Length: 169
Image (cartoon, rainbow, N blue to C red; front, side):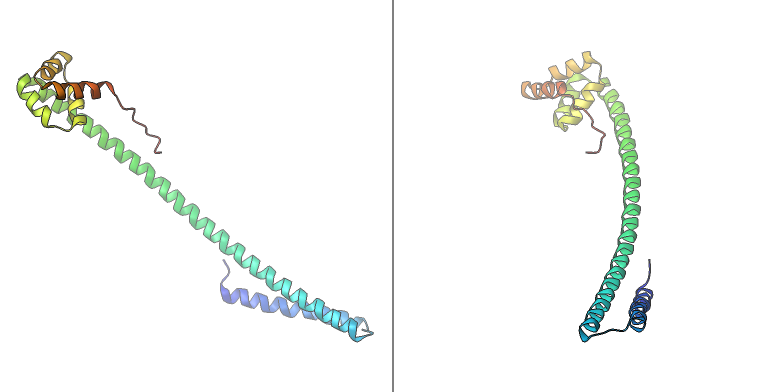
C-alpha cells in the first residue's frame, strides 16, 4: 500500500503533467478567441479534477485490498481456532463418556435401593446416561426402587435420545 506522502507526490506530479499537455496544445494552436481560451482552461480544470479523483480511487482501492487481505487472515485464524475448539470439545465429550462409563460400573455394583437414592438426587441427564451404561436388569431394579414420578420422568427421558449435531450451527 502506498503511503500518504507517496500519494501526494504522485498527485502533484500528475497535476503538473496535465496542464503541461494543454499548454503544449495552446502553444501549437493559436487560440483565436477569449471563448476558446476559457473552454481550454475549463477542460484543463476538468482533467485535473478527473486525475485527482482517479488517484483518490486508486488509493481507496489499495486500502480496500489491504483491508480485504486483513479480513482474510482473520477469517483463516478464526477457522483455525474453530477447528481447535471442535477438537477440544470432542476430547471433553470422550473424557466425559469414559468417566460416565466408570461411574455406571460403580452404580451397577451398588445395591439397587442405594443406587436409586443417589440417582434421584442427580441431574436428569446424568442419571439417564448412568442408566444407559448399566446392565438393563440392574437398571430395572434401580428404577423399581425409585418413586413413581422420578422413575416415570427418567423412563420418558430415556426414550428421548438426543442427536449430537456436530455441524457447529
